[in-house]
Length: 173
Image (cartoon, rainbow, N blue to C red):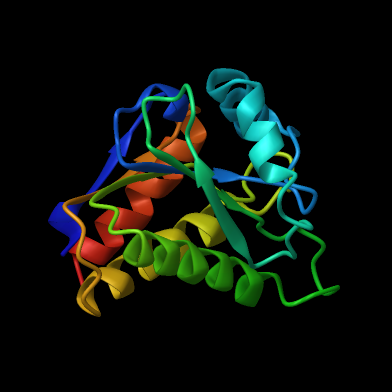
């Protein structure tokens, strides 16, 4: 299963995949770096498509067309903000990956690229976030998610390193 998972130091908005999964805020508007980059690259129609939703709670995800992106779809994943002890952050991050994979399956997506959900502006600790991301991806693949490739597009070196470590631990299990 892990052979269908790859890590890239790349700009997710440039990838020619069926769908990209970007970290989003509950209002689904252009916000942090990945979300803003996605909105810029997709053009103004993406903001209009997001307005069709009443927003999303942390742990949820919604799908829109990709418009001017190379990707056919954008999955807007609302991860948790890191506030230790305030809310069940790990449960929320797990839910957002599961919800994203449910949308991937529902829409027949064969290639998907994820950003590091909640690792930027939302300050989720990289070791924990990367472990959850990789664990949930492996679980989805083992449970029959029919995709050719899951890519983690990780722009920053430290984020890439954390995901590389988490993937290596999975491959050694």
